[in-house]
Length: 208
Image (tube, rainbow, N blue to C red; front, side, top):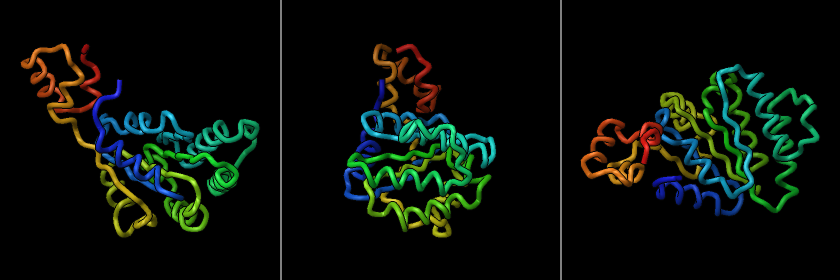
């Protein structure tokens, strides 16, 4: 069951519903519920959802390409795409030949971008020259706050000025935390909130 985050969902919906390209950056500490928020938002949408890992740039490219192929064209799964540009070209071609809006999610972006310094510049190139007027939404998400703030959101970032919104996901407040344990007494709800600090992952471990 998905709980709370209505403000954040509404922010994502507003970007999705605009004409043409839209971009949102989501960041926050680990276990705060970023991926869960995104999955709730995209559950009724056409989406490529890739979660980067600490496996190096080449392996991330391979895994990303596989995810793209699985969604857009499974017949390409055995073809090697040597660069991320080739994969982005495929995405561009398919969105231009479809009336359905595509959501592209790169979760845990720092794990990939830290190993491939060109990735953000390549994203900037495609946003500016290929995707700006296309029926597409890009969501970049990360848990490494220093990277997201310095490399993605700052004025020095290649993609600065391209986002339509940014969401720094925070801990749940007491009211929303209590929704995780609706059958608890007021005292026990307060204890749960105090123990977890409103962190979504920890709240989800309680038996409601």
